[in-house]
Length: 435
Image 1: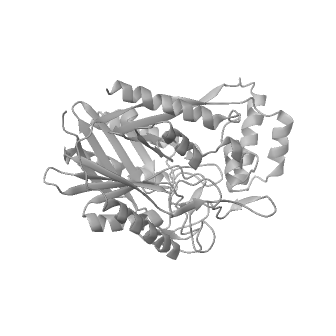
Image 2 (image 1 turned 45 degrees about the vertical axis):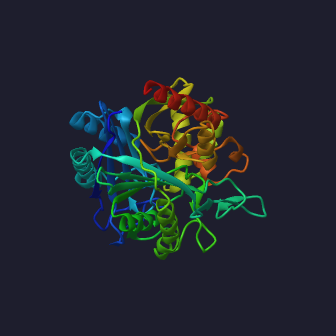
Image 3 (image 1 turned 60 degrees about the vertical axis):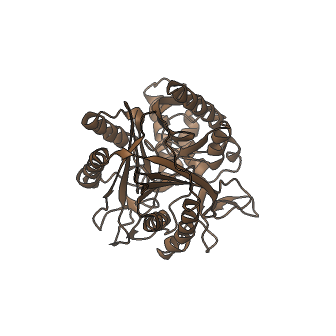
């Protein structure tokens, strides 16, 4: 077996104070830097195979922006888009790189002047720093997160804490050692929204930044966070909710994550050479027929033109439907999304441009008896929430956003099962090619 080589680089991608903070409203302006935002690049090679996994401490990265970045990387470094995962940690205290309707426009100055140049610098540095490594990992339990779809006594779903609903408590820490036996890098996989600070005015990586900083200190190695299926999972805050009312909450819950990550890291004793397998391609999600024109008009009339957040998203959805009828646009049977897979031995990372619900990631992992499949949300684009079929009857914010997803047709029934099965087959196909 040829050696697995890894190069790592961490770059600062902090915006200037005064930028719009993405995640709650389009009018939240930053007033200070609490902690620097980062882009951490992991460059893997084994023989002719090469792959990139990049963690950016941002909310989300728009589909078109991901395509632009992946194309720049491929031109400059000959690493194909299929082998590149760009994962946002989903902090709500960073600049707007998503541009979702209702939340404001993409900060193009930030993208052009800071994000893209620093990403390219990081990839170049990581490639130049490659060295042979062995890999160790451990899985432990962490209660940083909790299901955030609280069901009230009035049978209404609100943001809060729902200890009775689905939640994956597993935290995975992956560690890499060089030939001298030194730890050179770590990555942490866990699923939880970056909303501990709440609708604050500080630029911050949120709770996961506290966690990664502490594991860096203990291990002496660059550490990055890769967020899992966090669509219905938020931080388990002591205010009873999953969004804080100030920056102090990132430290309260961040130190819980830090303690857990360090404890799990310290149980890793078996480092060994592993095979790298990577690949990707486009999958699709089935679509239903668009809603009747009269129903779309009623939704459009319900919300004012100066609405924000989910209300403007609903108005925009209705406008798309009305435009489709007016222009005689033919209906489609499915909409595509890009998915990349990077496998290190029996660890399999798979990207989703969605905010996946927790149960979807659990079901995918359950399909592989001899693998640990680590699904990544907000990775390789941004296409909003992706819910489970059973969530529809309860409604709530995530369900509304899923139904008004920026297409003029809604997703098909049982779309969660469709995506799960297609992902499982996609992973199996890529792993088989690597045999």
